[in-house]
Structure formats: C-alpha cells, structure tokens
Length: 267
Image (cartoon, rainbow, N blue to C red; front, side, top):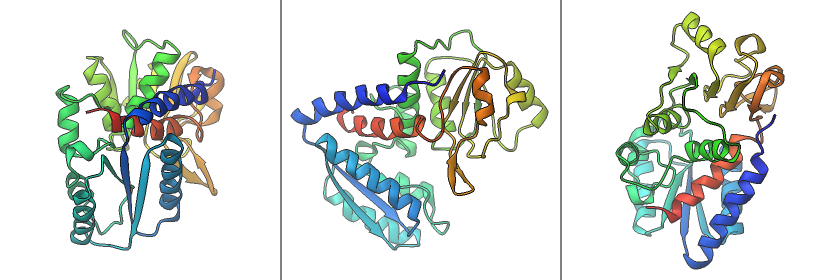
C-alpha cells in the first residue's frame, strides 16, 4: 500500500500553522547559480512559507566561487533571520562544506552543517534533518515498527543517506548501509533479505522487482531525472511486493519540505 503522505503532510502543516500564529519567524532562501530546477524548488518553498504565515525572502546570486558565496551569506547572517536555507546542489566550483558550515547552527534549519549534525548525534537539539523527520512521521503514522527488522540504507549522501543513518543510530537500531562503491553481491544479498529499505542514491529505478522480497517496506527518498521526468531509485514494479511504499514524485519530498519549516520552531 502507498504511504499516505498527503494526510501526514496536512497534519504537520496544521501543527506549524498554529505555531506560526504565536511565533513570528523569518526564513531566507539562498540560491547560487542559475539551475532552473533549483529555482523552482526555491519558489515552492517560499510559497509554502507564506501560506504558513512565515516571512520568507530569497536571493538568487550569480556567485560562482566559494569566497563570493561566503560574502553573500555573511550579509544574510547579519540580517538575523531565524533560518537560512541554501539550495543544493551548489555550482561545481564551490566548496559545499565550507559554504554550508558558514551558516550559524541556530539558523541552520536544514540541519546540514557539521555543527548541526554533531548536536543531533549528541541529542543536544530538538531539530531533526528534514528528510529524517519526514520518514519518522511516516513510520509513526502507519505504525511501522523498525525494532527487530532487517534494515538496509542505500546511499551515504549528506541530504538523505547520512541523516537516515543518524536517525537509526539515535534509536540504536542495527542496519546495513551501501552506496555505489559497495560490493554489489553483498548489497544484493542484503536487499533480498531486507524488511525495510531506505533509498537515497539518486539512481533512476536502480532497485528492481527481483531485488526485494514480498512484504518489504520501501521508502524512496532518491530523486533523479529520466526522460524529462522526476523518478525515484525504486522501480514501480516493486510496489506490488511492498507492504508499504512511497512513490516518486509525491512521497518523501513534499513532506521533507514541510519538516524543514518545523525546525524554525525548535532549538
């Protein structure tokens, strides 16, 4: 069965809207470069913020070098917004780590800087990386239990794989993690035995029906483009085997954006 993301999203939106009525928050979105897809994502986030009653501003910068980006962010930081969100990916000429780590921890609602991750690992913040928070909401809503299950995480990236792994670590759960450099035979063996698969590789339909078992839970947070369409890591042919699954588009992604805004109201 498909995970009921629209209902879950609406519940979280209502929660945030109530908070926004009593706590005025301001968020600043920053996009470097001219990527059209990134610009659309920023527009979507700004529109959602305004619908929630959150003040949102945006800057599109033509900066192409790390030093230029840091100057832009320094100017934004001085304006004392409650949150700063840098749209990824950055131009290839920039050092992503340096740019993201320049955002003060208290403003890093995307939870991408090293300091933010340290706070999350040490349980010294109420905030959760948006993709991990979205997945947790899904699991809670459908009462999907992870304890005692064979869990596989596909991908180790900072946007999906790493936050999911940290979420599982916080719950002291055992899991196996693989990426494109992992041993293919070991990965396939683990997939075929997995009760739950979290995927964030960004490889179009890389997981096929023959790789998963009946009754598996498939959480697809990987997105990429194929023939002009947004697709996930998990081929739709797998859905008939799944107890629960998230489609792409329309699954993890929209709920992740909502959970980003909730971090504005947490410390």
